[in-house]
Image 1 (cartoon, rainbow, N blue to C red):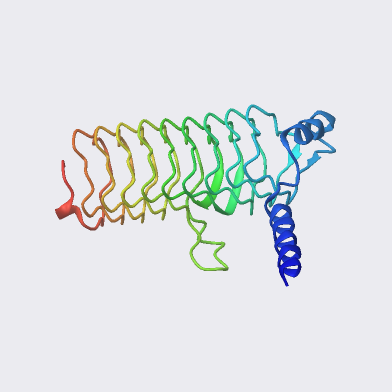
Image 2 (cartoon, rainbow, N blue to C red; image 1 turned 45 degrees about the horizontal axis):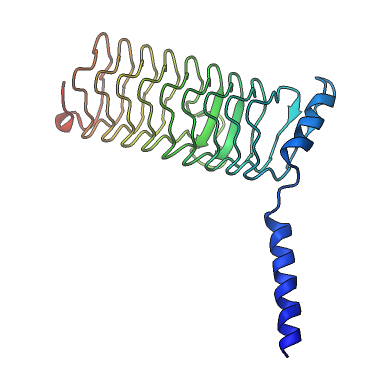
Length: 246
């Protein structure tokens, strides 16, 4: 009976190690990237890369569609122009990474480090709740809900409790987004489209909201202390009576 239990235990441990081991390590990924070209990208499609150190690598000639990047370190890496739809990126480290012009759809990026990341001109419909996006570049992003393409109900970017302090959101489309309790302290929100967004308890202290459109948004308990309010649109907003600093 004891020998049976030992065999069963060994089997469970071996299966567990197989389940949690990444498909590729850093050295193997580097080898694939060196061999890759634009016409024949490195095949990382649906690969398990959980917790792998992939920092400071150039992925522009790689296919990462559907890859599992949970806990992976992609800091300072270049992912510009990639299609990252259906990837898994919870707790991923993309600090200082280049994500300009990427497409990220139907993805969870909760609790991730996205500080100083460059998301300019990207298209993102994902859950980024509780992530750190301090000093990130979100200029000219198209993160607003596409109301002509909602086959599964309202799909929109979620930025609840996200740290966007000192971030650049100039000319960003965040329409119908949710930024409940988001920290936008000292952020650049000039010409941002925040129509029909949930901004409950968002912190806009010292933020620049010049020419920002807040039409039909929920501003309950939002903090606008020392914010720059110039040509800002407040038509049909809700919760204005409980907001502070206006």
